Each structure stands twice: as C-alpha cells, then as structure tokens.
Amino acid sequence: MKKIITTSLLALLLITLFTATATAQTKKATLNHIALSVRNLAKSTAFYSKIIQLDTIPEPFHDGKHTWFSIAAHSHLHLIEYSDPIIVPAKGTHLCFSVPSIEEFIQRLEKQQLPYSNWQGENKAVTTRVDGVKQIYLQDPDGYWIEINNDK
Image 1 (spheres, rainbow, N blue to C red):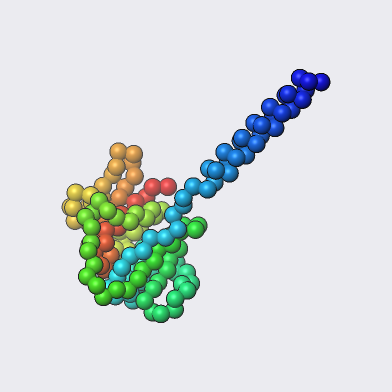
Image 2 (cartoon, rainbow, N blue to C red):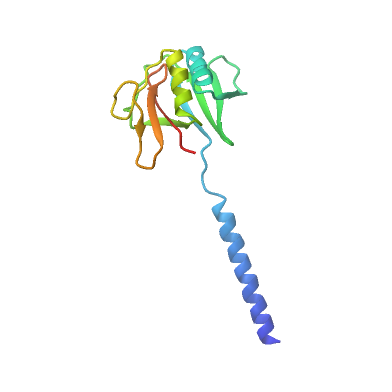
C-alpha cells in the first residue's frame, strides 16, 4: 500500500512538473508587430499592399497617419507617417517575406519597373543560398531593405 501511494505521489509530481514546464514554455515572447516610419503613407501603403501583397487590417487610430498589415497569425506591420528624417539601416537590417515563387514575384517587379538585386548588389540577379533558397533584395519607397525568398 505504501509503495502504491509513493508511486502515485511520484506520478502526480511528474505530471505537475510537466504541466508547469509546458505552461512556462507557452509564456515566451512572441512577435506582435514591427513599426516603420514612412514619409508618404499612401505611397508606402500601396507598395506593401500591391507589390508585397500584404493584407491591411483595421487600425485603431483612424487619423490618416497609420496603416496596419497582417504579416502572420498574430503579427503585424505598422506603417506610421512621420515628417522627421528617416534613417535607413544597411542591407543587413531588413524585413524578409517568403513567397511561393520568386519568378512570379520578379515578374511583378519587372512590370512595375522596380529595381532588385542579389545580396552582392548585382542588379536583376538572384542569390541561391547554400540550402537552396532563392532570394532577392529591394527597397521600399523610404529605402528600407526587403528580402524576398522562396523559403517554405
């Protein structure tokens, strides 16, 4: 009887420990949103909706200075119009979006006469990473770097 109680207590302790660990793991930080300052909200909104093909979502401010896009299940891209100078970081600091077909995306860029390059900066060239993923780089209307790749 004593052995059964000890075994039951041990099992209960292990279940409690497992549940506590699982609960702690679900409380990790998750990406909520990325915010970019833009000079011309209409122009940037058109770029992200027509070229990158992100869907807009309701934004709470309704002041004509914000556009919100859905970029994942619970993650957003916020564009905020500012008149202050925008400091654009180097290419290594970029947003990255995956698309089903690099070739179709490039056709969209060509149709709109938008420049793109590979990582090395060669115009109209595609980089193929060592893992086989193809990628290109372009800049949005404010100069922010964007990587487009076909990673699944």
